[in-house]
Length: 264
Image 1 (cartoon, helix red, strand yellow):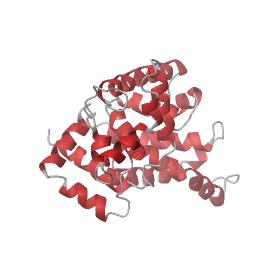
Image 2 (cartoon, one colour):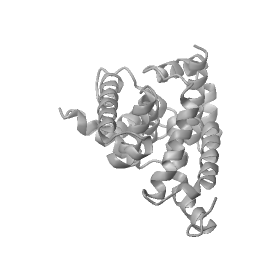
Image 3 (cartoon, helix red, strand yellow):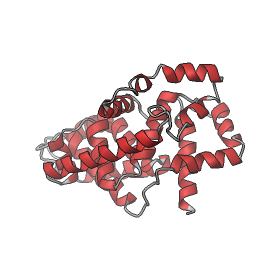
């Protein structure tokens, strides 16, 4: 319930300020528009109902993310983690369909355009879903939504030492997976989905030019792999996955991947 010092207008204003970030945070956890809508709606309802418990000891943003993270985690506890080859399995289905459905989304959906930069964000979400849930949440809060260690500890109800350990392990796993799989940073990487999907809109020469211009490709020969991860996270931070030019295309790929994995 509302307090005398926090009015309905105050609540509505705060929700409006943080709504887009909350939605993108939940979407990156669930990879599902439908689940995101349900979880976000539940988050805002809980926030309204528990408003008298908000003491201002942390920011409203931190308090709201706490509710969102807990609500999403409860939803995801029964879900299995995605395997490293989730995108490969999705790609094989597209190939068996000769790309018909994917082409249809690309050509007819309002936001079905393909952009390599946006697909790197999509890929980041897929790889994050291979992490244990606590690592997944901590990594996003720190590297995508720029929360400090202390704030993440408040959101996840863990000590700063535990949060630092979660982040260390999550980053190590993410960097190892990208180094092994991503053709953008490893010439022997087994995933070429960026280049393959870009072929829907561009010819081979254009694709090679676009790929060569990416900062992550330019930095791929740098022995400091940590920089590559930071370049990738900086790119992801700049994208709202629910408002991107290719959000319909990527949502289709998420649904196809989830459907494939659920059958296993």
